[in-house]
Image (cartoon, rainbow, N blue to C red; front, side, top):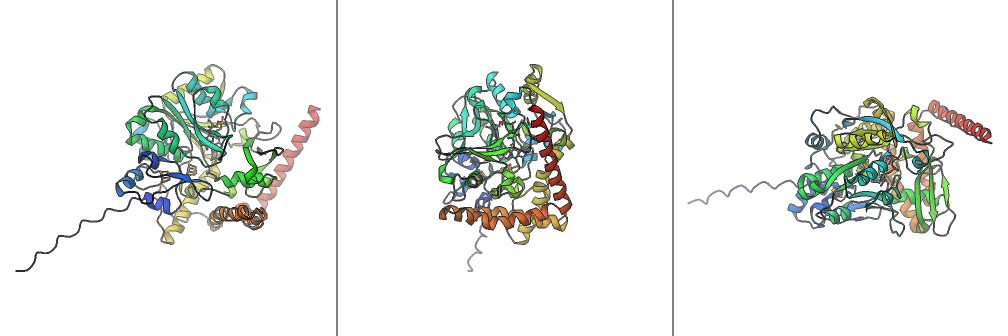
Length: 478
Ligand SMILES: Cc1cc2nc3c(=O)[nH]c(=O)nc-3n(C[C@H](O)[C@H](O)[C@H](O)COP(=O)(O)OP(=O)(O)OC[C@H]3O[C@@H](n4cnc5c(N)ncnc54)[C@H](O)[C@@H]3O)c2cc1C
Ligand code: SF4
Ligand code: SF4
């Protein structure tokens, strides 16, 4: 008698894609996987100065659960799916900004107050209003950490005074891992502010965790171009004489009442040293478009307007607002609650708002859309051609842009990647020139590709015109 044929082995389940996210350095450090797995996946600061998850040795069932809440893993629903589950189905949706109820530009009406914020001041005002009206018990936000070792971290504010004491944008890697794990189940109601991928990660957690879903009442987004590792702040401060180990505090956005909203300064405070400040564009790697110290995750992101947030605030980079040094927000609301809070500020005179169109919103973030839609397609196509795993995105891989732009996308990616290596070397040797020397030609090449000669001349003339306007204003004030 012949032996029976052995039964075919059951197919091996595909490995959860969070593994690829981490291996390919696409982790943004949000911490959702850590919260979902009760800390089995630690999220800590790595050598490159940003938070990263470590899933080594984690059991497959836990990895599968983590993949469902990771904003870059294929097992998690994308922003369109989350928005469809979350917001009123009757609200209009646009492929660029997502679901939208109210679309506004505006700022605080108190001129002294608005200078304490990065842009129009509406983000911190909105969060403070939620506390003052008792809609939430506390707010999860990012603020400076005077006692280090990091310059900024997530924390919880229980009063509006505490919250408003630390406004402004932190272009600096943080994680939600500890703070969300700590608040879970404490019986309090929260609002949380974050960049789009963090908001998406929190929504994904809320889908799976009824306790968190019951506690997190408002998710507030801030528009995000890309996230920076700590090397960004350190390199800008070091170029002004404050070495990384002496750096105590930074302000990424100091407004100049005599200049346009775009001409904000970067300020740094060292231990015992005189504070310094400079226009970031005058420092190597300081221009936003250079993407120095940009997290690799941001090369694979397609969400500009925090499409899963109840409300999102950004900068109104439109000609009619840019000239105003006070700064102006763009705002998109997606729930009745968020719209009501905003309008309460108009009703009591603390907020000025005017309607803008969806096209205005897109124009206000034109560079972001080039990077996150056209640029993303190119990066995906490059990686697919190189046989590498890429996450499923709402943008298809492809080279549908002029050749010059393809080269620019690649130049920016190289510049970004090398900034980490060069700075690490410079830090280890205590010699800033090991960073600045090789970065300069990379920056020049990037600028050559990004702006044709005519545009560069036009930019210089515009700068000259502004200088004359400022000089005239000063003379007039005297
Ligand atoms: C990494 C990063 C990139 C950005 N890129 C763009 C961009 O490309 N285009 C654009 O229009 N806007 C961008 N922004 C948003 C912009 O810088 C302003 O934060 C936003 O317009 C709000 O300004 P405001 O005056 O209303 O806020 P403020 O009144 O100054 O309050 C800011 C609020 O945001 C919170 N916050 C600050 N940093 C973080 C952070 N890292 N994570 C979570 N919460 C934080 C603070 O806790 C505070 O409550 C970015 C912000 C960050 C943090
Ligand atoms: S992106 Fe967030 S959820 Fe995904 S691996 Fe990193 S920390 Fe975890
Ligand atoms: S660019 Fe995208 S991935 Fe990067 S921090 Fe901003 S929202 Fe997250």
